[in-house]
Length: 385
Image (cartoon, rainbow, N blue to C red; front, top):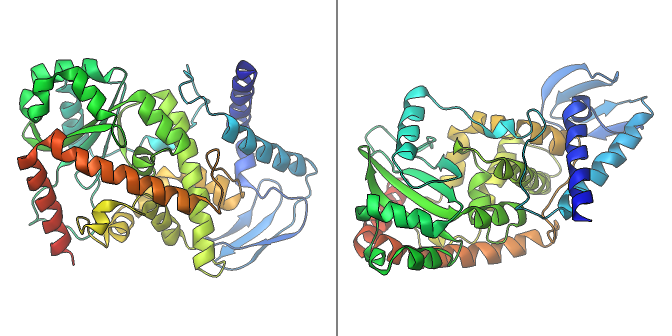
């Protein structure tokens, strides 16, 4: 039964890849009115005349197959939501599926990030850089101390990674290293399942890197069980080492974030759509209930700052998702989530995972580094208030 579902999933993915027009036109056989913020006019491939100027637009479609396509896409959304084998090994994905996730950065930064990743002798399957050390945020000036480079390393066997890394970089670890790599890997599983080493000096850069098992990473991205890593991946990140499983599930993670953001944007703006607000809602998802906000350890304007400075990156990161969700009304949420219960579920899960990660960080980083990290966060927050 599982194999049949997987084969059907591949078939549906191929359908998306080979029918790009499906994502570029309204899926209705009737005259309809929609809200939109686009400022362009033209004729769609199916003959629909459209005008997008932040007001109602009218479209008339005559293709009788569009109704079937609409039903097919809705059925695909339902089937995709029910496919939860996040450890399934993809050997390939359809052309361009998830290519929006592969954001480029300037060559100098790319070299620095590649060099940081290459410095680890321990193997990793997936890696990405994120945060203000990789993508600028509004509110920072050249006088500010250069922020840490934040990196997440997805590994198959955490104990093996820590064993090699403790021998190579013992200075990165707190006194927990004296308990051995097996203990570190078990301690890592507390909270969101990430083991952070902050303020590690790598090639002259301050780096905070987190180690997570691939299973934990994939489970969160696919099911939102903690929303700790899923939320980070909903904002633009720099993929340093790719994994097809993450690429597949993160595309659905982005689609789910867009589904919620569209709903919240229309709800808050009297059914008027605003693209900046849309990306702001996506960014805000992962900060709801975050203990760092409650403790004043984060800049209260952080959400606006992230979107303001990275608006074009958000557009690039969500380009195909935007077409699916905003223009074509495709809908996706992980299994068990609905528009009614998502806010409550995420608030509970984020509060729990962020609190446990914060407490765990005192032990994994050590008291000195923890105080240094907390103070640096507090200073940044105070400067921008």
